[in-house]
Length: 322
Ligand code: GDP
Image (tube, rainbow, N blue to C red; front, side):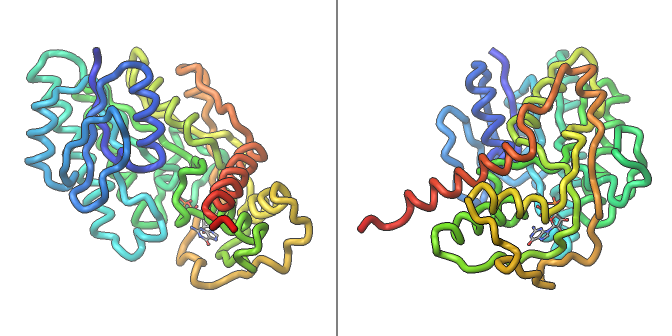
């Protein structure tokens, strides 16, 4: 039986990955942050720790000697990275570098390959010089989150040159009903559901013109598992290739909830407008399609529909019965 080690298990991608690996019979070990509540993931062996504590995490990794390492732990919010740039650098950048070194140590000690997947981000491209972006697009991050992820991305290549099967999956925005509400998609679907059910009267957002390439999170997890197990390591853009504006997302969400006349329900609040924000990000996943046989299975309308439906169901089931 193979063994995987996952950081960031409690997040959207971590839970989908855990379910996927357990279903395959993989033994799943995960780092669970000291101060956060333990995620409810039956079958996963949780180890308390902090990714920025390099000696402890290294000792744990050497002890477990996993076959696959998935580094999903991160301060995952661009918005929060502006408030905590130094913590973002430590978690999203330096901790990834230390984990790569730990994986290499495991590989050298046990004399067998360790496969490492770094969850990178389209934010490493910042304001890109070409559309859509691919693996050869220049790194030009425009926020602390993107800069820290860019450092980790570069370190993956450094370790690949040392014969580690190290993969950087350059993930475009990927969403699901498990997305927390600090992200715009879930904020929209949760609020639209609340408006449809008479428990909210408006939706306050920032930049409605920002365009993002939104995909279905389990598809992106599938791409990362494929990349871990491919014959050779590489960087992969994982994206649908199609960008939509925040306004498009809002319109699709209201349509799904059966509300046609929504313009007056949306207000722009400067609190949610960012100091610098990439205007458009869309990825060209040709390499992943060609080398990994990967393709996205859920389109934009379906993605929005699934998220709105989940929020409508959740909010009705959590209402007190009369
Ligand atoms: P990100 O692309 O990883 O930062 O994911 P987000 O879901 O947080 O943001 C996606 C885009 O939505 C960005 O361009 C934001 O500026 C834009 N946006 C507009 N209004 C909001 C809002 O109220 N909350 C968030 N989180 N993003 C917003």
